[in-house]
Image (cartoon, rainbow over all chains, first blue to last red; front, side):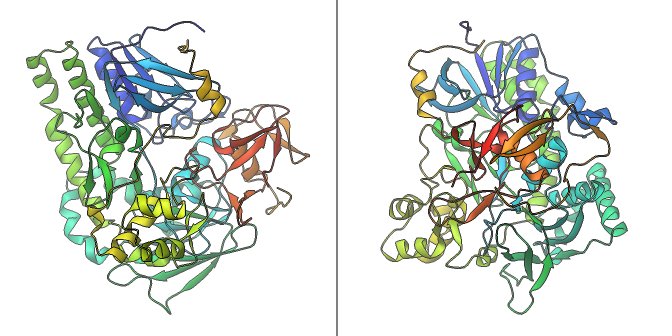
Amino acid sequence: MSDLLPTPLTVVGAGPAGIMAAYTAAEAGVNVTLIDDNPLPGGQYYRQAPPEFKFSNPLDAQSGRTDAPVVLNKLPHPKIRVINKMLVWGVFDQHNLALADGEQSYLLPTDRVILATGAYDRPFAFPGWTLPGIMGAGAALRMLKTQWVLPGKRVLLAGLGPLQLALADALIKSGAQVVCIAEAANPMKGWRQLPKFWGHWDRIQEAVAYLSTLRKHKTPLLFNHAIIGAYGKDHVEQAQIASLDDQGAPVPGTEKQFDVDAICLGYGLLPSFQLAAAFGCKLRFDQNLGWWAPEHNANMETTQPGIFVAGDLTDIAGAKVALVEGEIAGANAAHQLGYIDEKALGERLAPLRPRLQSLNRLANALQKIYAFRPGLVKAAKDDTLMCRCEEITFGQARKALANGATDLNQVKLATRAGMGYCQGRFCSVLAAPLIAEVTGQSLSDLQPFTVRPPIQPIHLSVLASGAKVKMPS
Amino acid sequence: LEKVIMPGDLRIQTGVTRGQPFQITVNGNAVEAYPGETIAAVLLAEGWHMVRHTVLSGEPRGLFCGMGLCFDCLITLNGKPNVRACVTYAQPGDKVERQI
């Protein structure tokens, strides 16, 4: 264990945004530390398979995506120190990042920070949703694409958006049967967004390829349907879906049953804003997401000077937007550190702005077509678990609200929902609509749970080891 | 972890070559694992969808977020409790035990 010089810039998260941010700053001459909690860089989108696996198509080692090598091969870089398997669990005095690697904790001083902490699967609650075999669409994709293990053999997909088609395509090609795709969007509502797809031919081509796989395998794709129940003893054996009304609420009498051994829930993604919140960055309520994300300006700088954000953390706009945002954040951080002058920065950013605008237009269209309609929360019943960690039902939260709780923090104090291992990442998004409904507030009037370090659970022994500050070599 | 719910292997065989398999034990049962596999992948591939029972109601849980955030896939590994199976790589001789 040797002491390590801190770098002026630290990038947290080595997905598309983080890699591009680190690379852009490094190319300008900045020494960068790039920290990620996975064993290999790439994030979720360019997630790399274990090096022990050998593939007949070499691209499969690098997520199988055709543009993956271009991004992943930016590392290693002489100016970038990559630290894998390292969690950033807090920040002290705005310039000291608290890290932990499972054995011990460290303090890393830094000047500027770019947060590219990504996103996670939005939870969707319904009776039976905690049964083994029911997992996030992201979890299933990771299992397929990096571990090469199927989530099941008879799989039902329920959710919102094109990720469902990508997952169905991957499942079918890997030998699983997709018994049904319940797509909650109503295409009749979304057609006005179609002109925004003009010019994005690669995305259209991708969708057409997925749909042709579904057609070939006669996979039912039911629009305006959502999952409303799952049954089984020790694992899921049956799934129940129903069609939705105008608001997105399930319509009684329209239920359909499917025998399954796995269900993948893909109701969109939520930004992992916890570290940004720990920095004191202001969060804004995103109407498309129906959730919070860090506020930032056109330079990707947050309300905290010198703290930047990029990628899905900012708005769930996908990998292509993340790459551009990473570049903008990296160039601006390098500028603030004195490595790029005003004029060069302007030239560097000029071509990126229109590109980002065009990509964001498409992302925005997709977010509108696949918006999370308010009625969808009606799939959960009073005896359905809202908080998986502390095992709190929606009914218990309702009771706390009847007793006078009016916001997320008060429901947490009254019920323990949000005090468990996941620290409210999952239950807060389920509790918020209920609180808004019962108290007559709009969702945007609420505030997410207060974030406190450690932003992810770490063992006390790891925390205690930080008393002797050491740096990883 | 006593119930095998699906006969056969959920590992995808075409397009991929795995290394030399090694053994781990799951609640005392010998189970084959491949280098580079997470413990969650080994359990899922071998047919154990259920990973644990919850502390309060005792309901079954399995892999959920698959990225280390939800802590539903907790196991006891070589005597150490509360290890996330989805982000932990299997090593030869690992002893996996179910928590409750």
